[in-house]
Length: 199
Picture 1 (cartoon, rainbow, N blue to C red):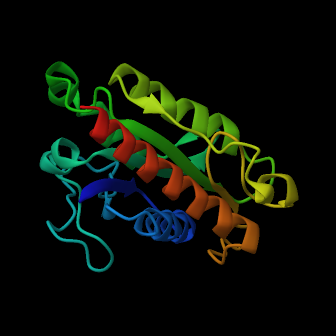
Picture 2: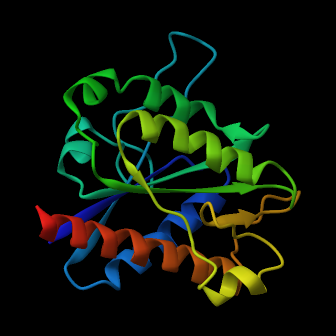
């Protein structure tokens, strides 16, 4: 069984909803399973720390999750066209994984959510790809052969699954957003299995 790490930070639930649908897509591929993890919040108060175990949802990510995964789906809400601070903080601490080549050669994809339709989703996805390239990962998007990519009137890009939450931050995904997130999960899992078979 090849495990795909679905790693995300979610503030109001939208990115978590996408992560859950990406995990569904991964589980639709025989021989693949999703390992869902999150990152803790960061604080402007240096002494503040999160509990070791989240109050709800998946556990916090550990280095072994990166070592053991066959692929990675990375998700964050949009913050002024970039990833949120908790995800950036986590990625900034991966120098050891970079030196050791922990993620090199593994497939990866990215996903995001924003409050508005033109709220910086695509730039967020593109900037999330940059550290993954530095780690030597193989980036995957969503091809236009997925019909929902042409049909969506909300989230969904060729760079990765997205959701438009609206001003109220509603985490409910549209049918097209669900299908694109699942398609992304399937594509990531299928690629990871093919790469594992080639080794």
